Length: 117
Ligand code: AMP
Ligand code: ZN
Image (tube, rainbow, N blue to C red; front, top):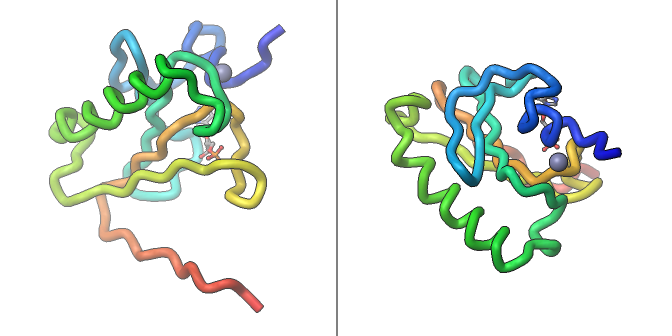
């Protein structure tokens, strides 16, 4: 059985605050927001990593990314926004269905990328 939380949200088994949906992806509010507004853009086809993408997944993800600025007023992206895709353990990926974090609605500090000693 597929116990992926995002597949379950896609299939309506788990509730979510869905703000947009089309044939390739859906966008929900993150349950634990890390910015004033924090959405997750989730391709409908399940895969974990960029390295696992089929041609179809690649095409879908390109289409999904292109769609984001078109949803500017719906999502409130006018002031700018940040996209994050966590990949694997070191990045802290916790849900193994590829998703794009969309953070906006505030001035976002640039993360300190220096390695901690
Ligand atoms: P990541 O750490 O990149 O895998 O991000 C997973 C994100 O999914 C986290 O920001 C969680 O807060 C979010 N999340 C987990 N479960 C749910 C859920 N049921 N509804 C909405 N967001 C969720
Ligand atoms: Zn999934």
